Amino acid sequence: MAKLYSNLFCISAMILWAASFPAKDILLKIWDPLFLYAFGLVIASLLTLGIWFFFEGIKEIRKFPWIKALIIGGIGFGAGGSFFIFAQSLSSAVTVAIAAAFMPIFGTMIEMLLDGRSLTARFILGVFVSILGGLLMTFGSDEGFYNALGLLIALPAVILFAWASRQITKSLPDFSNLAQGSISILGAGLAVSIPYFSFHNGVNLGMVLGSLDIYHIVCILIFAAAGISISQVLWIKGVAQLGIAMASIHMNSAPFYVMLFVFLLGGSWVWLQFWALILVIIGVFLTQTDNSKSINSK
Image (cartoon, rainbow, N blue to C red; front, side):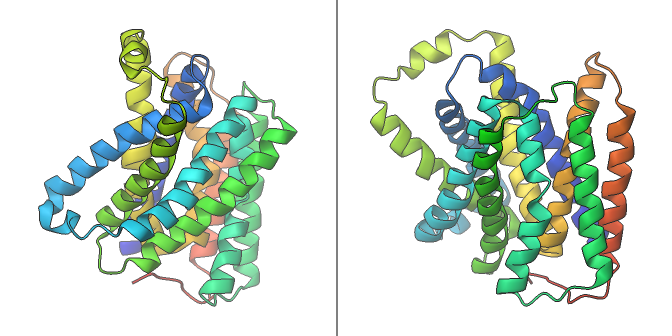
């Protein structure tokens, strides 16, 4: 039952992350990528801090591990997220989805090197099937072009994201998963927003906010709250139980959820992405029922 809940956490994280892709595409038309990410992280950090305070109180927040937050959150999610959004700005969400499809490979390599994961043919087959499903989903996208340079920029982001997801759960065992997720966002927010706004001190936030209409405000809230804050906490909870190798397989389902949101808003249903999702589900089943060494952060 615990594994079922962990998978549901990962699925929920992917649904919320996917919801932010259309919102980011809209905002990237009016803002540069780093400003959008820095601004989104500021909002997400404040929201996450509020959630953490509400559930665990000020005593836990006072234990905030500044150094680890800046190293793991700043490098892994701050720099990694900056690469992601810059890659998306060069082409479309498809570029990021193609890069993210390979996260199970990087996640498995990290666990082999750092956690001693052993592999079986069943696990390898599950990873391969899930990657195939993720790549097939990109072919069914209505915005289906990718940029080679964007892909090269997104791949390091995938490695950093996989490393940080594993590291935040391993290096802070005395904190809850809610705290671990919150710390990673706050670390990323500090590492990205402080340098950006320091070097761009001419940015008038009041003027920027005053120029926005309700449509753009909703997009910002979707991007910051759903795409960064809440999805990150759910993702960390899933990774803590499953390990980064198995949790990252769920990344390949994100294009389906993007298509689903577009469909609900009046777009077309893409059957290729639905059948590709079935492949991802098969990959999840194969990897989580194999006999390789179980990786659990607890």
